[in-house]
Amino acid sequence: MSGITIDILRQRLQARQHKLTTQRRTVLEVFIAHPGEHLSAEDVYGILRGEDIDIGLATVYRSLELLANLNILQRMEFGDGCSRYEIGTMSPDEHQHHHLICVKCGKLLEFPDDLMDDLENDVLEKTGFKVVDHQVKFFGYCKECREKLDK
Ligand SMILES: [Zn+2]
Ligand SMILES: [Zn+2]
Ligand SMILES: [Zn+2]
Image (cartoon, rainbow, N blue to C red; front, side, top):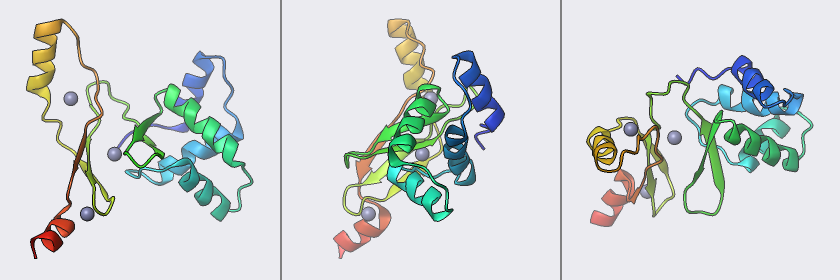
């Protein structure tokens, strides 16, 4: 559970003298309603249009950008030229899960274990740099595609 709420959004916007507009709220609500999903601007736009909500694609783009700058959403590129967003974590010691991307079918899987503690400590020891988060993407073949390849 990410724990990001509309209240947190309001606080972070206020801290930067931004207003909580209906559009910004609506866009965040899509992510709260679709936890664990990685949505592009077009996906969000499609979901909102499907709910008869009148919003322009350009507004969706701008809202996503702002929410990512506020660390409410995480922006990710998966190599298909289309940015995707997912809701961020609230806890500072919870790092982002890793993403497994199938280069054959384009499927996106999540890998929840961090497994980077040794590396993070190594980085700190050798450079004095404290890692607070990371975005790790693994490219490969998913189980289904591998089974097809093996045949
Ligand atoms: Zn980590
Ligand atoms: Zn696949
Ligand atoms: Zn993810």
